[in-house]
Length: 110
Image (cartoon, rainbow, N blue to C red):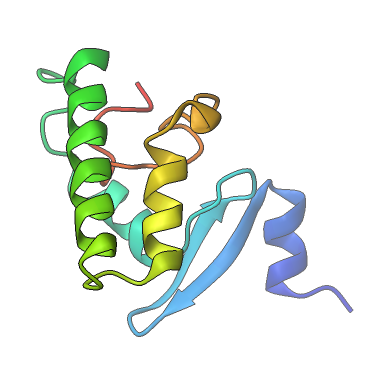
Protein backbone atom coordinates (compact mmCIF):
# COMPACT_ATOMS: atom_id res chain seq x y z
CA UNK A 1 0.00 0.00 0.00
CA UNK A 2 1.37 3.41 -0.99
CA UNK A 3 1.42 6.17 1.61
CA UNK A 4 1.59 9.96 1.43
CA UNK A 5 5.32 9.67 2.24
CA UNK A 6 5.80 7.33 -0.76
CA UNK A 7 4.17 9.90 -3.06
CA UNK A 8 6.35 12.66 -1.61
CA UNK A 9 9.53 10.63 -2.11
CA UNK A 10 8.76 9.98 -5.76
CA UNK A 11 8.05 13.69 -6.29
CA UNK A 12 11.49 14.64 -4.95
CA UNK A 13 10.25 15.87 -1.58
CA UNK A 14 9.95 14.48 1.89
CA UNK A 15 7.48 15.23 4.67
CA UNK A 16 8.88 17.04 7.72
CA UNK A 17 6.81 17.61 10.85
CA UNK A 18 6.84 20.10 13.70
CA UNK A 19 4.30 21.48 16.17
CA UNK A 20 2.55 23.32 13.33
CA UNK A 21 2.03 20.15 11.29
CA UNK A 22 3.50 18.77 8.10
CA UNK A 23 5.44 20.58 5.40
CA UNK A 24 7.08 19.32 2.21
CA UNK A 25 10.85 19.82 1.89
CA UNK A 26 12.87 19.13 -1.25
CA UNK A 27 14.55 15.74 -0.82
CA UNK A 28 18.00 17.15 -1.62
CA UNK A 29 17.89 19.75 1.17
CA UNK A 30 19.32 19.17 4.63
CA UNK A 31 16.90 21.29 6.67
CA UNK A 32 13.68 20.53 8.47
CA UNK A 33 10.18 21.90 8.85
CA UNK A 34 10.92 25.18 10.64
CA UNK A 35 13.60 26.29 8.17
CA UNK A 36 11.31 25.39 5.25
CA UNK A 37 8.53 27.47 6.77
CA UNK A 38 10.88 30.45 7.20
CA UNK A 39 11.93 30.20 3.54
CA UNK A 40 8.27 30.14 2.46
CA UNK A 41 6.92 32.85 4.75
CA UNK A 42 9.82 35.27 5.27
CA UNK A 43 11.00 35.99 1.74
CA UNK A 44 12.38 39.37 2.83
CA UNK A 45 14.54 41.24 0.35
CA UNK A 46 15.15 38.47 -2.16
CA UNK A 47 14.37 40.61 -5.19
CA UNK A 48 16.22 43.74 -4.14
CA UNK A 49 18.92 42.81 -1.63
CA UNK A 50 21.37 39.94 -1.77
CA UNK A 51 24.42 39.99 0.43
CA UNK A 52 27.67 39.76 -1.45
CA UNK A 53 30.37 37.25 -0.58
CA UNK A 54 32.52 39.83 1.32
CA UNK A 55 29.66 40.59 3.74
CA UNK A 56 28.85 36.91 4.27
CA UNK A 57 32.57 36.15 4.78
CA UNK A 58 32.84 38.98 7.32
CA UNK A 59 29.84 37.70 9.27
CA UNK A 60 31.35 34.22 9.25
CA UNK A 61 34.63 35.51 10.68
CA UNK A 62 32.74 37.45 13.33
CA UNK A 63 30.73 34.37 14.35
CA UNK A 64 33.88 32.22 14.37
CA UNK A 65 35.73 34.70 16.60
CA UNK A 66 32.83 34.93 19.01
CA UNK A 67 32.52 31.12 19.17
CA UNK A 68 36.24 30.68 19.86
CA UNK A 69 36.22 33.32 22.60
CA UNK A 70 33.09 31.92 24.24
CA UNK A 71 34.42 28.35 24.06
CA UNK A 72 37.68 29.45 25.67
CA UNK A 73 35.69 31.09 28.48
CA UNK A 74 33.64 27.91 28.96
CA UNK A 75 30.44 29.65 27.87
CA UNK A 76 29.89 27.59 24.71
CA UNK A 77 29.90 23.79 24.47
CA UNK A 78 32.89 22.49 22.52
CA UNK A 79 30.70 20.65 20.01
CA UNK A 80 28.96 23.92 19.11
CA UNK A 81 32.29 25.75 18.84
CA UNK A 82 33.63 22.96 16.62
CA UNK A 83 30.63 23.24 14.31
CA UNK A 84 31.08 27.02 14.02
CA UNK A 85 34.82 26.59 13.37
CA UNK A 86 34.01 24.18 10.57
CA UNK A 87 31.26 26.29 8.99
CA UNK A 88 33.38 29.46 9.13
CA UNK A 89 36.54 27.76 7.89
CA UNK A 90 37.92 26.71 4.51
CA UNK A 91 36.78 23.08 4.88
CA UNK A 92 33.17 24.23 4.47
CA UNK A 93 33.84 26.16 1.26
CA UNK A 94 31.69 23.73 -0.73
CA UNK A 95 28.58 24.52 1.31
CA UNK A 96 26.25 27.06 -0.26
CA UNK A 97 22.88 28.46 0.67
CA UNK A 98 21.32 25.99 -1.75
CA UNK A 99 22.38 23.25 0.66
CA UNK A 100 22.33 25.01 4.01
CA UNK A 101 20.44 28.32 4.45
CA UNK A 102 22.91 29.92 6.81
CA UNK A 103 21.05 33.22 6.92
CA UNK A 104 17.46 32.01 7.21
CA UNK A 105 17.13 32.11 3.45
CA UNK A 106 18.05 35.76 2.86
CA UNK A 107 19.90 35.16 -0.34
CA UNK A 108 22.88 32.82 -0.07
CA UNK A 109 21.20 30.38 -2.41
CA UNK A 110 20.50 32.95 -5.11
